[in-house]
Image (cartoon, rainbow, N blue to C red; front, side):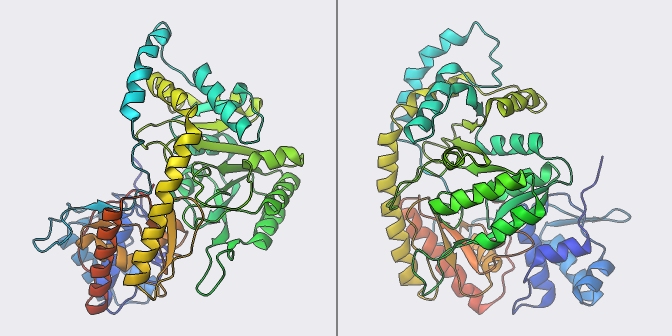
Length: 486
């Protein structure tokens, strides 16, 4: 069995700006622990030899030895003579007796609560299962009624679609991974935004891609809310010079910045992708969570068809709009690609559950009303979070967004990883900024979702306040919990 290991050079890149006011060995141990907790260093990965890492980081070997010992004492590292030192997940830290927050609050999941009445909808859909029991139940493409409902939804949004252009998947992440596996060959280049959804990085790398990042920024302090967005010059040059086989974009309410790509920019990007022969995947799982965006925006693929330029594949799901527990997503693509995807799918799974498809088919007919409800909830949550952060952290900058479910908060100083680790001590799980980038970027940023209740957001900001204060007083050395970013 192959052993995962990280080289001293790769670990240096992952560490980023790890040095703090703490002793060097404590700061190094804390950063390696956070990388493990966040999944950036997979469990059971072998760390570099102490001699190699000390030379790479310009530290004494004694310092690295002390850091590894600190990790072993915390249960985050196991060392076996002759086999090296491997990271592990430490046991969950016990609740603090003086924890004023009363339990764990997980803000690593940027997801809406379950749609009210969802259980009733499921009960209504259940009798329809009888009509499918005569078949094998293995469904690699999607039941006809759901594919038709998804196609109708695209048509209503301005993108005429046939059911044959739809494949139903096990959520959006499954769709992204399947597309990557079919479209990418090992060593091919893939364009990706930075920051971006971390599991998209993983899916593309898992397919063997070499990632080519292009920046997306939120409005900075003192800038107009319309500032920021995609670095178009870099984006177009990357398409022209790198010829990536695939590009992964979130053009509407980008996760984590909340930005939306202007219509004219979409057309220019699609034209450049067509010239480069690049297939663009538009992740639209959050695209319909509009709060108060001005203007009309069609699905990304509609612009490709309107200007007859470029190939755009759409990915969607109900995980953000309805409930994450309904593992139903889809791919909209041309028929030939759908056939390739169906053929390739059996290597990893044998289809999507029928009952969940029946539930979602019922839901899609009521989606406009559901989206109106979600818009009201998100508007309230966004405004509440903006006010909380402004009151508690006047030096932080929260860009105002007009849709989506997250705020990309600028902390002003590069301490995101330390703050995320300290927040665990006070019962809050929140992903550090570098989790959304490559090679340790974004230490000045923290992603905060505003899709939780006012009480939960109050608790989260209280925890961040305690963590921020502790960060100013002494270094972070506490263990925490694994957070899987959604």
